[in-house]
Amino acid sequence: MSAQVETRRRTAIRTFAQLCRDLEKTSRRTEKTRLLSTFLRNLEPDEIEFEVAMITGRRFPEGDPRVLEIGVETIWKMTRSAPQTTLVSAPLTMKRVQKAFDDVASAFGEGSRNRKRNLIESLFGQASPLEREYLARVLFGEMRIGVVEE
Image (cartoon, rainbow, N blue to C red; front, side, top):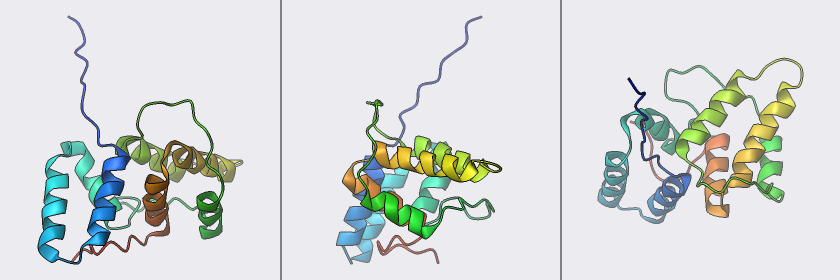
């Protein structure tokens, strides 16, 4: 019996960043609702929880106690420095961002600060300027796109 390979369409961070930009540009609640519902309908079921957290400026879903433990100054420097070049040609996906955040949160011990910084720098290196902007906002925990949980 052969193993069946599951192929899923993964949401590109570009799509997330464009959504955030569009949400930020409009003040109309009905337009924000339309944008969000369209975006959420197109997600795979295993992407929803993480992406909702990201939209609201959290690195992990509500109730997940993990933290990234990356200083604000470190993040600020990464947003201002030239991004690393990467050999990866595939678009950066939200699943890869989630995996990187998981890896950062689980890094501890000797050399963990450098591992964490390298993981986040790698994300910034794979991201376009627009994508980096919204990744940084998530890392800072301040999206400022007019979407809050009630």
